[in-house]
Length: 457
Image 1 (cartoon, rainbow, N blue to C red):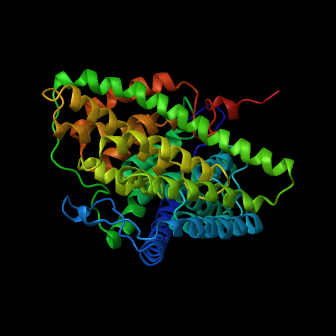
Image 2: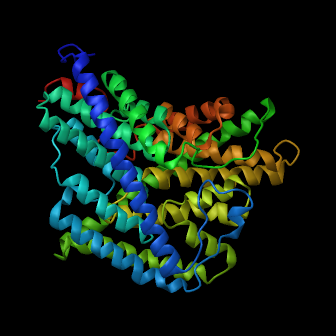
């Protein structure tokens, strides 16, 4: 606790943790179920393909098939972007883009979020993601759960400090639950708020909320890790190679940040200059994505995989990478393709999260690096070691660009169910964070807590 800050009582801590945990658990369950239904409906019926999904077995995931009519992606993704844009800009313009930044803005501001925002965000994100937009479900979940935290603050008339803690607790509980990573989510609630600081007061209510929320979610959806993995082992002689992955992930992460915000600036300037309706911004982004996917799909079988892997969260193709089922060409191209489609989806104003695409980009980067090393040094880096590079890439890239290294490391290890690679992951993550500097995917993060505790001139 910093000097001058209000101490949160035991009763208020219990109130915030329990109430947000219960609402986040059922809210996340409802959002996840609706999202899975919409994805299966649109991808299965309209596209006609069977996409790879995370958690599938080695044999089960080989049965995936691409859509027979690939050009259908264009009207579907554009239609989804139009509907999502209309909903957002009509009812809650603050629900555009990736929801985590909006939740952070509320935390560092007055702590208020309009009651309609969580519901608008949920609907808009469902449409964006299920129609093929390159976005994750954690951003919407963070803003939804943070919105419920603000609603609870209004109902129980919490103080400004308690309101901020409730919002941060909602962020952690929502993200931790949707990714089946309650420990990482609880730590994330305190760590993601600042570039170089944490809010320790958030930890206790966030731990409580995450446990309750995840217990509710897991009771209906199961407690298995999101990704399936094979048995992985590593040795000391491989550590220098793991270290080398850190700088690579940092550079790819910086590219992701620059591309994302560069696209956002370009779209905002273009539509402002020509006076075009803002709800058409996501449509333009979706149209470019559709053209890109169609063109790539017809070049070769490898580029078809790149095109399909650039849609949605990308987790199904990360699962393929964890099973060593992606060709090297695909692994090399996917980080750039995923960066492009994510920038065009969310940077144009579409509704979704940047966490899942960031995790996927890191996984593909690590997989490509590991596969190249296997080709060059097959005795030192056997093929069975390549999936370790995939996981470390996920941790190093997003842990550094989110400035939440501890939380993201815990979350990815929970998502894969393998804590045995903790040491090499820490090594790569340290270098990635040092190179990343102040570059961040979350523009609403503050440098340190003094930024809000001290008066501004």
